[in-house]
Image (cartoon, rainbow, N blue to C red; front, top):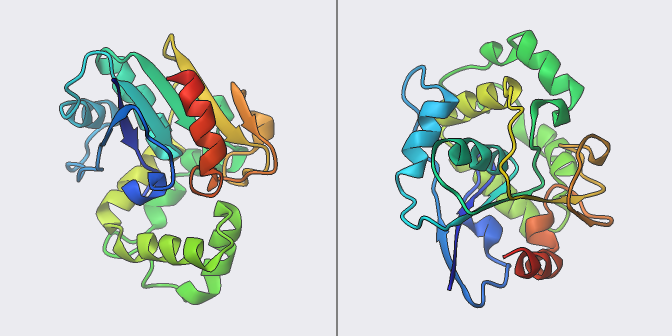
Amino acid sequence: MKTVYCLCGLGSDERIFSKLNWDGVDVHYLPWIMPSAGESLSAYAVRMSESIEDENATLIGVSFGGMMSIEIAKVRKIYKVVLISSVSNRLQLPGWMRLFGKMNADSLLPRKSLFSFRPTKIFEPLENYFLGASTEEEKKLVHEYRANVDPVYLKWSIHQVLRWNNEWQPPALYHIHGDKDRIFPYSLVTPTHTIPSAGHFLVYQEAERVSAILREIL
């Protein structure tokens, strides 16, 4: 039986994978762990990798989870890496993210709470738009992610995304992406598999098509 370890997106949890068909797959979920003060991305990847027991495991990462999958593949043997709605190197990050990283814009975010300083209900529609969350079920799920994410972890993660300088790619790398992704624009990435008319939330919205592609890859 094939073994996979799934890494969800920034601030989300394993529910994002809940609609996928895992028949014939031994699936595990790697939960995000709290970063230590000043911890580097590579050091964090080492700690995350300690939960992986299978030498022939495949990593499946959504968004920031895809970036972390690549970082883990740098520090331990991984059979395959599958990115979903993610990027594989720094040049695939949209320009505004790289610019914000150079400007240290994330340093302006409050450490204690990233959401208490703003009228969340006003900004939620904009955030849902970029994520591609459209149904009430999807909006409720994303709202719960926002409400429950740890602000220290969130700020650390944003810092890592904005400054990601990766140029290395795993030997067996696969990439599933929607051509309507508003977080990581399709024009900047080079996916091995494209899902037409799908956005950033495709692992949840297009689970049947994603499952079919994963069966081919695995």
